[in-house]
Image (tube, rainbow, N blue to C red; front, side):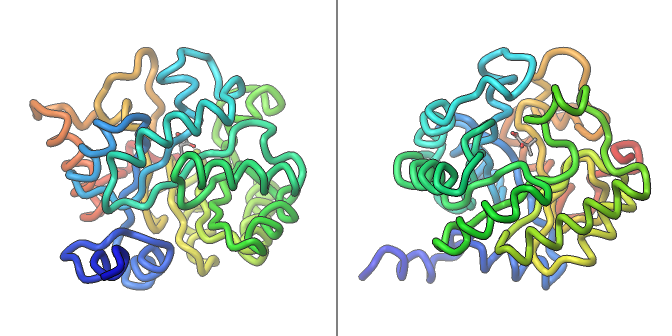
Length: 275
Ligand code: KIV
């Protein structure tokens, strides 16, 4: 019997794009988290997470940089390979690092490497209207794509810091327009970072594809957090939207289980985590 047929009839079959679409349709929240190695990949899988992102946040939490800009494709492939080995059920998404998708051809070549060498099932790129053509090209080659809007950490030097995006009406309208254009181009998932909760709700309601938020309010179809924030390992000032799930728990597994449970039950994020 083919492995994929065995998996289809398993009690908890692996998550894929169709699973995420069904979850949006059913109103079941998607619990996503980052991971960078095999041990944590297995732990977050055991905790019931639906989507795992090998984020370029690894540049900050693993490599000690101030931004994600120095992260290379090879770095993400290295960590993605390790994570893929530890996962069974969650859907594995990998970030395309800074300047690895500047042209359509470069984006395709690098997305293929993330999938073939890293084991990713979906690639994520930070994009506005300028990336519509790239998303369209990847989608036309049947590559699953997540478009990341709102705060785009790879643009930190251009934007002038890590700050909430889409507060002004014109910026909010542009973000909605970009999200719709990216969806029409073939994005399978949209990720919204650090935007007002009302805008997160509006964009989620307007899109057909699942929307995952980080600091985008309670009404997106799912939530994602950086694993090290959930476990309170990150040093220094924490973003307003993050939550330390280690409080009252004595294991990393219990903390990630609590995160999943709070996302699913709509308990996280609370008003104190929103803009
Ligand atoms: O790199 C990352 O971890 C991310 C999340 C913050 C969504 O893009």
